[in-house]
Length: 149
Image (cartoon, rainbow, N blue to C red):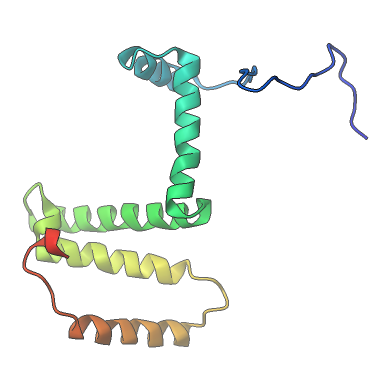
């Protein structure tokens, strides 16, 4: 049974009506939201609503929050490993065009995906899968320009 905290009883909102949502945020986050709202000429409430809606849209675009999390894991891991290698080899600012840096990023992504694989996938299955991907990739022709891939 739900405990009654007093106050006015709730009512169902009318279609299209906005409802109040109260919550607390850190002063730093409020400052960022206020700055974004000002630069976009939206109210603070409109900015918060838009950003929340966008987060659900991103989940849907990736196929759900689980897939989105995997995508973010891959992107951040690629960046961390690629930038780390770029610092080692003193690569240009655009390290994604440097072979060593790109390979380091790719290796980091593969390792992260293997580390975060479902427990049902055994280490032996992982080895088999990686070997079969290596074979498939070796047989696949590469285009000269990155945009043609």
